[in-house]
Each structure stands twice: as structure tokens, then as C-alpha cells.
Image 1 (cartoon, rainbow, N blue to C red):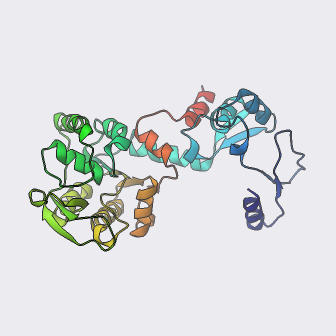
Image 2 (cartoon, one colour; image 1 turned 180 degrees about the vertical axis):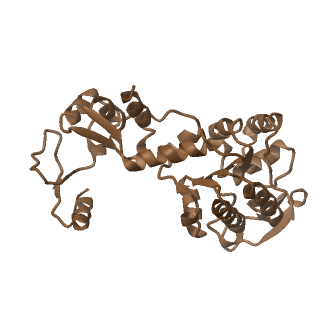
Image 3 (cartoon, rainbow, N blue to C red; image 1 turned 180 degrees about the horizontal axis):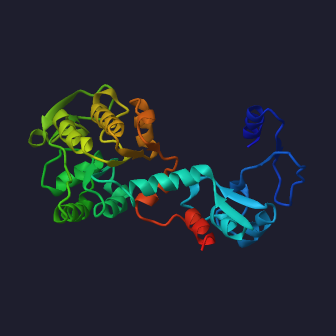
Length: 321
């Protein structure tokens, strides 16, 4: 944190003191600003040690949590201190995150569309199951979509998929069908014999995938189909790319999707983007400034979408009761 203190001092136009050892107390003069070494290095931080919490609580008059990115961790400075400090509150960023996520899920204007991409169903299964009853349209992409295609009985060549989770995918599809929702799957795809920057590729319909080919992106007909759902959306939640967007040959599907999310935003939809790969895609295709909100939380964002209670937020909420 020494570099942070130095930079912060330049921003404020005043010297900022940095303290590496601070658990036993720090003398601070009126008007002085002190930055302490990262609390994650303290023994007992990750285990939410009560003794550590008490020590830290004695050091402050007011505790402010402004770290949404760690809100899903029940640790000493995210959970314990929020309960023990004399006064505890959320900082502006944390409050902004809560407001945006609430607007996107609990108070969403409809139609509500969720885009869930990525390589594996197993990493997003809880999200899919939680969102299915809530959204009007559930768009899946990447390896996740491949497993759904397997569940529909399609042959997908050597594409990344998880056959063991076909049953779970069918359950999600059933939920969407019974409620009258939409779960559009790819109708055409971009395939290659291997993943690589120099890989040859072709666009084909689902029924034309060869046994030695793998799906690495959605095709133009699929992009056009998904655009129809996105243009009417009033709320869009986006987590995960729909192809290997880091490679030029397989980026068009994610690019098209990103641009349609930006267009929906311009037309009045509330759009929220979260997750490292998704934010990287939004930046790569110059739409990061064209969506309503970019979440700063990786794991916290995902756990919120899973319907889980975030310990740091719960601790602050309990203080208001």
C-alpha cells in the first residue's frame, strides 16, 4: 500500500503517511491522513478471528466498507468489523453496486434478458438455475451453450461440453418452457479443427458440424436472432462471452452481442456487465462506456446472481435493524 499512499498524496496535494505495522494503534494528528498496510496480511483476517476484529474495532470511530469485490467473503474486515465497530456503513461504491444489482434483478423492468456465457456449465449452473425463474429470456453462449445443444440431441463434434450435466441443462430448459420464457440456442456456428490464432475456420449450420470440428463462436444467423431479443429488452444482465473473443477468427459473435447491448442501453434499457472476461470483452469492443453499469465484483457479482447472501452486505444491513 506504500505506492497507493504516495499516489493518493499527489492527488490530495499533501503528504500521506504510510504505516506498515498498525494493529497496536497509530497516532494520528488532527487533519492528518494515514494509509495502513493491506489488512489481508493480518493473521486471522481470512478466518474472521474475533480477537483480530476487536483489535481493529478499537482503532476506528467509523468503519466504511467500499469493497464490493470482497463482499462475498465473511472475513475480519468485511464481516466481523462491520458488526463490531461503533459505527458502520457502506461506502459510495458499495452502495452504487447494491443499487445497480437491485435494479437489474429485484426491481428489473421487463423484458429482462440475461446472457450467461463461458466455458463450463458447472461454473455457472447455480446462476442458470437462479435466473431461469426470474428472467424472460436466458441467452447462453460458449461451452455452456454446447452442453445445452447436447441436451437437445445435437452432435457438436469435439466441442467443449459437459455431458454429465445434460440433465441439469434439461431442467433449466424445462423451467423456461413452462413459464413461457425464451432460451434461444445457436442455429449456426463458427467451427475449426483446433483453437489457435492461425486456425482455419468456417461458418455452418448445426447439422453440418463435422466429427473433428469444434464450436468456437456463434454464427451470423444466431447473432441476428439474439439481436431480436436484445432490442426489446428493458433490462440486460451480461456475464460471459459467447465465443473465443480473444482470437480474431472467433470474436464476431461476442462483438455483435456487445454492440447490441450498447444499442439497447442507448434505447433506454438498463444494462449491467460483470465478470473479468465480460468486462475485457466490453472494453475490447469499445462498449464499456456505453452500458449502464460495469460491476467491480468478480466473485461477488457471480454470487449475487446465484441468489446468495453476501456476508459483507448482510452484516451492514443487520446494523440497521
